[in-house]
Image (cartoon, rainbow, N blue to C red; front, side):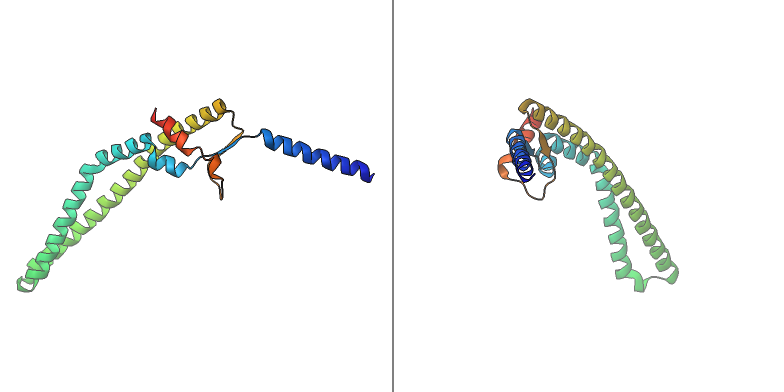
Amino acid sequence: MRFVLMVMSVFLLLSHAAAQADGKIGFVNTDRVFREAPIALIAQKKLEKEFAPRDADLQKMAKQAKDMQMQLDRDGAAMSDADRLNKERALANANLDYQRKLREFREDLNFRRNEEMVKVQDRARKVIQSYAANEKYDLIVEDAVYFNPKIDITDRIIHLLNQ
């Protein structure tokens, strides 16, 4: 009985080693792909261009509110109570409007960024899958606690995304 168990154990070890010898594993650093791949950079520039006018408007609003605050600080003591109260209300309304528009801007930007990143992610996945099939990989991993640099195919994937 012991002999049979030993033979089975040796057989299992040999079959496991043979399976590992035939396996081909790769690693892709998706964070790097999203930072460095041309399609990701194009998506980022597209978002910057799309949101630049709204960003400029927000900066203008912030400057106006700051100027209002400085005028109130500087001239507030010399103003009548009614004028000072009106300026304070105008400043409070300007700040509320700015905060609302800033929140909307951030929400819209995050929504659009997610839309663009999904497009980049879909394209990257197709390239990775195609590369894996062409190069006969058994497994490609995206997230890993540790990986040997010799299995890192990130540069190749970024290069393929250039084409």
